[in-house]
Amino acid sequence: MSVFKGKSVLVLGGSRGIGAAIVQRFASEGAAVTFTYSGSPEAAGKVADDTGSVAVQTDSSDRESVIARVRDSGPLDVLVVNAGIVLFGDALEQDVDEVDRLFRINIHAPYYASVEAARQMSEGGRIIIIGSVNGDRMPVPGMASYAMSKSALQGMARGLARDFGPRGITINVVQPGPIDTDANPAEGPMKELMHSFMALKRHGRPEEVAGMVAWLAGPEAGFVTGAMHTIDGAFGC
Image (tube, rainbow, N blue to C red):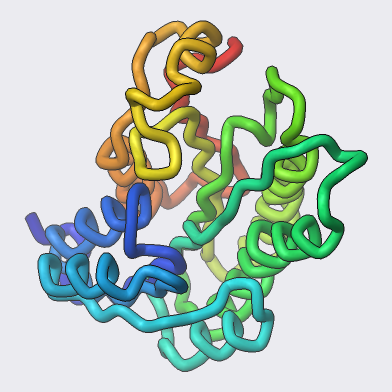
């Protein structure tokens, strides 16, 4: 397949899980893919070797590093922002510095990366942000700051869709539910609780999320922007 042959793709956060599946999907369809990683150089090296992509270390909690990475990547056809972290704990007891770091990675980085990418994108450019079903639904305690960070992406995408629309650039948010990754394994301790909220009693696969991302980046999604695309097995519907 060569849907993305000749296309330049940057994936922020591509060394593991959903990000690695996204890198694999674009590379398999002919794109020239660069992806970032933070603290997992061995995993990043393997993904790069397996896919023929380029891995570059970037700290998504640092605004200037994110902006520089996007700027130095040149005119992109597709930007995918997958880098993100989760923070659990009672809101009354959470470390405020950790909450600020969560916001820098989960909110600030997607915003600044999207704006910087749009500066050089041509008409037809695609920006795709990986959010979470928790931006819509939060059935358990201890995740208020995380849910807030994912809800913020919704307003960001709606607003930037207006700003970028006259130039033919689309921006969308993909909102996964439980996906089988190192961070949330299908056989992990939360399995039964999460599946109890779902119509489909299983974790999703990273490749399924990558498929939705690829569709949004492809030619059939040119009229789709400012929208949330949930892929969650009907989590708490």
